[in-house]
Image 1 (cartoon, rainbow, N blue to C red):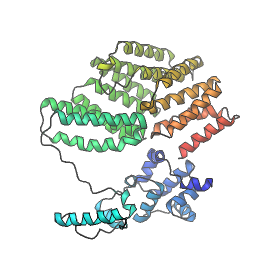
Image 2: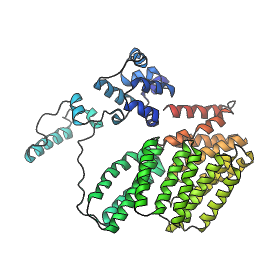
Image 3: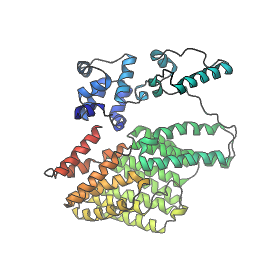
Image 4: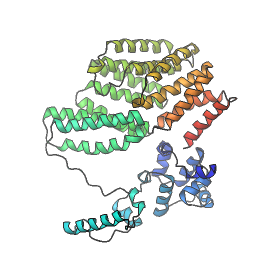
Amino acid sequence: MNVTHAIEQAISFAVWERPQMRRALAERDIATVYLLLQRVGISQRRIAALTGQSQSEISEILNGRQVMAYDVLVRIADGLGVPRGYMGLAYDEASHDLVVPPPAGPRGDAGEDERVRLLLAHAAQVTIGAADVEQGRWRRPLPRSETPVPRRIGDAEVEQVETVTQTLRGLDYRYGGGVCRDAVVAQLAWSQNLLRADRTEQVGRRLHLALADQHNLAGWTSFDTGLYGAACDHLTRALEQAKHAGDPSLAANVLYRMGRVHLHRGRVKDALRFFQLGQISAQDASCELTVSMLCANEAWAYALLGDERLALKSIRRAEDEFARADRDAAPCWVRFFGLTDLQAASGMTHASLAATHPGHLARAAELLARSVGSRDDTMARSKVFELIGLATARLMLGDVDLGLRDGHEAVTLVTRIRSVRTIDRLSPLEEAAAERSGLSDARELCRRIVELRAG
């Protein structure tokens, strides 16, 4: 029963988002794909069941047999749940015709009367249940047709771009970048076309700012799904356009996000440089809230480097700047940074300092407990990060019952959002729980984390 369930269960999207896996998929290196799947706990038996191959075929591929046939590659992608585009199997006209013969009857050049007749006939068949619908077609994208761009644009069109960005940013906060990253990138493809339209100089500046912020979000959601190269590309474009539009506040926000990408990747000194560059732009913008946010993250970087004096100095400055900030007047891209976020950054700073100065651990737990208690569902991803930090701190302090409770809650929330970063950040919690392996609840927490990584 359990084996059958494991075979039928879909592999986690996060597995396909890891850089090494993305390279193997792009190169159609199926042997490496299968090897990487095995490393995260996907057995040869399960791979065979999902792809419709025999275990001997799986073994042959792992031993060097190349997979070249297009239909086999499609079967592997669909069976494993890999987005076809990751393997270069997107349905352009050439590849579509290799797999699916063109439908009978008139197409693009048919007269309107004939097209309507065919559409009506098909609708009638579907309605009464007489149509033999090939469900596999539903996974294929429809032929692309670009939305026309207005010849001339004004503030209304730019406001639409801004509103879409804000809406998608809300989805990112709540459900993770994996939910909306493709939507952001697709929206960008259209938004950038507005640069071809006639406009006034004032509207042009606002458009560049809107595009910069959309690239900013595209970079952040790419980062959240583990696409670090794409994240840096979008953030670079965002910085360039923010600078071109003459908005140092947005430039500072982009530099903050560049710093966070590198902090997550373990390049702490590089992250520190980005945070410090961001402070220069934030000061040029006279935006105390942005300065506070950058100082708080600078403190975290100093803490990871073990520099207690500079970490605490940066936290104090972050608190001073926050006290002077007018959050309501701040730009939309930094308005998320409130007291809860400052407490969370301070908590992570103290938690990081505890690696070399253990006396900071209790303060870390206190601050993270406050931030977790203030979170609602609109900032679910932030709550996950803070719960992971809080659970880890409590386990290290010996507050085992609360630590395990928080740890289980964190893992449950991770399963509800699409964020590779949250999975990456579970490692310290797993290590802290493993030290309590004599407890069944701690072993269960470790097991859940391992299963989450494996998909």
